[in-house]
Length: 202
Image 1 (tube, rainbow, N blue to C red):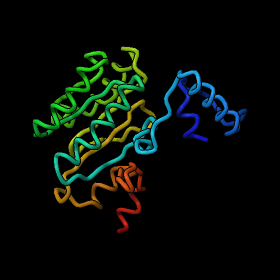
Image 2 (image 1 turned 90 degrees about the horizontal axis):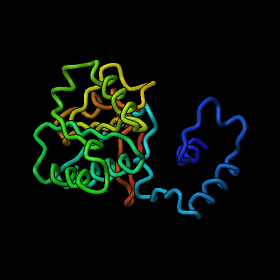
Image 3 (image 1 turned 90 degrees about the vertical axis):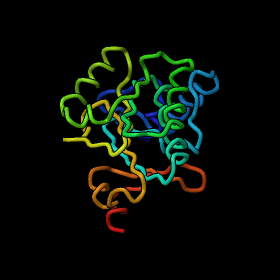
Image 4 (image 1 turned 60 degrees about the vertical axis):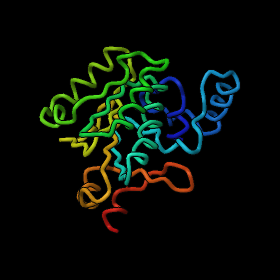
């Protein structure tokens, strides 16, 4: 039910589950899709549909692996009218060009920003300021991706979706897992979320 409601173009407040059932929401979604008012995310990308306040991580082995995740992650945010920020630490030219190309397409130039991760790590209040800025600009919230993303105090209660990326072998998986709610893993061509408690135990 939560995933169906998240696909609606308008965000529902209060307790939307009280008066609706899954069949009712599905009928509304079918109608909206038939009128081409919304698109249903493909099964391959469904795992990238994060909820507000959610923090996930990903471990990659090569720049190609990083680009394969980050490009659709930000494309999803751009399509959902979210302000997107990529916090980099020495990312490859290939990754930078792939992300910059997204911003050069049909979206507003200020909707996608590439920034230095160090500027955010040293300023704990910046997360809240950037969330407020995104909302003031008319975006639905803030979608962030960062190399070794450090979130002091987390994102609960904020209109922020956060993805921390780590080069495989650069940090202990268990240490990272404790800072995130889930990890993104590609299985059978689809992005899926694995609870980090499972990673930590492994």
